[in-house]
Image 1 (cartoon, rainbow, N blue to C red):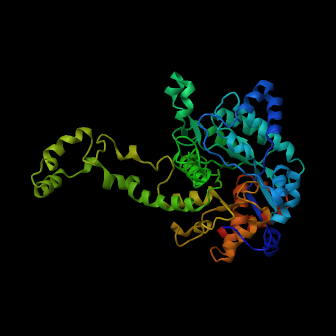
Image 2 (cartoon, helix red, strand yellow; image 1 turned 45 degrees about the vertical axis):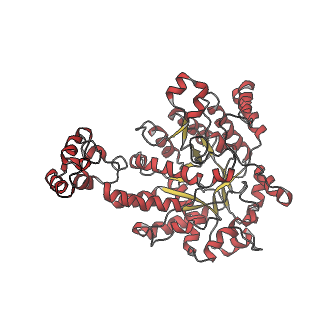
Image 3 (cartoon, rainbow, N blue to C red; image 1 turned 60 degrees about the vertical axis):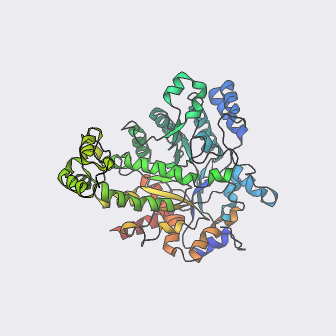
Length: 483
């Protein structure tokens, strides 16, 4: 949706009785600057190795975005994304009071598989961000990048980026693309052809619990910004970038959200809040509502009563096959009775107990209310200004228990889909003007939800910022309403 209004973000901000906090703006790092920091940390050889990763002929590389920088009359926006102090000066034009700023190179670094290079590049990025944003903390917060290929790497960088550098927001890799171990061992030169997604939250037991515990200790909400793209994905075209981009962030976010839920992370760390960025909130509403349908039919009680193969009534089956089998060999009950050695009539193993199949157990979900509470208290969903489907998340008629999905505004300023940063809030406001959301919904979308997320992890998150007083007032009001 492209706005043709003559208004600017400043005009929209003047209409509001609350600040605007951008949960997902972007800067564009100068590659040579990052390489300078890599050289400072890892030496010239490692810097040269990293520089080679930028070559356009890397094996398995999909079609990327080209012509992504602002040009012509919008050159000022390109400069804004590269110069934090200019960004800071122009925030009033955009109608934004405070901005979380994510790197752009950081998004590609999230997938870096080189064990030697990865921790150095992450650290270099965080040092670069801390240096570039000095003196701007009253209105801007750069987001640290945290590797998750191993728990040890993640904890070390959390301690450094948050504990030492003082960065107070983090983005982690929620989708690690790992090669098949057999191929890696026998033919490492082919390993990049076998990359498959894995999660630091699912099917890893408690291996990453030190990471989640460290996030709680340091007061940071892990955010993910993964797009599911590349070889082995459904978004791996070598010729069409838009084909690859459409829906890729929602798929990446959905993957990590399900991992956090079913991997039991929230069950073990009930105060930990997560944000899933740039994919919108309509997929979140679909996931939320679908979970109730699955739970209704696959909770432990339902498994025992309705789906346990050991409870099949073979007398009834024998009677029905005799009556309706038409004497056909492939509908013979004796052949069916012989089949349970491989499972029941539907192929289910007969030697398992329902307790072995409780998919909701690790998540700590024992009632529909538990699903509701996780989405209300722990999950936040980044939605771009021009995405009118964000309104689905606020539709209490659709969402079970009448809740509203915690959508948070992500401007995406700095990237190709924002040709004019002064129009971001104009596009967002159209959702209110068109009657898709209420004024309270719009306040929560552009301010309240992101305040709740960050202060829920760190009560002093907005201390010393231009939105400090408004954030405290909002917290007080929401607490009173809850009581």
